[in-house]
Length: 194
Image (cartoon, rainbow, N blue to C red):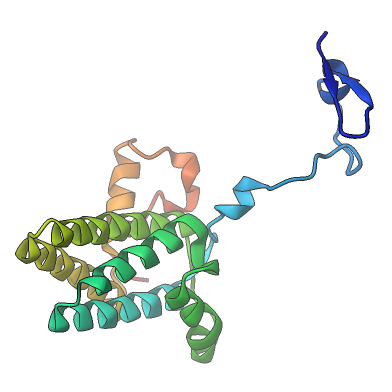
């Protein structure tokens, strides 16, 4: 077996670093470091009111961007979507405002499954990123068209409670393109509002 030299000059073999099969890992045996699952964790369930408020804030930011023609707005919108899809609401300024400040003022949370909301954020990230790239490439009309599509989808979420990304998620899951174990509570997502 190969040997590994540790900083305090202790020699460790591969057998010493791998726990026996079936053996429980005690807190003393755990390695310290970053738990990447926690870093990229998305809440499940999600407060629907917070998701709708975030969508409303996206509509406002996108509307200002469309009216002013400010290209940096596209980059801000795309960055916000990427922060939400990768890290949930922990880092995104719009999501933090929604989750920590605005949604609690509406009273009791309305909980919905998280995976479809993350999927919807991913669609928003793709559309907003494509819009920003089109703008940088000098194709402003195409960029503004994509942003208008994003405004429409976010408006449906914010003002009607209709999550287009969630419906697409449910459709893909029913077709077997998204495994059922990703979101067992999502198997019955339909166009009906509760």
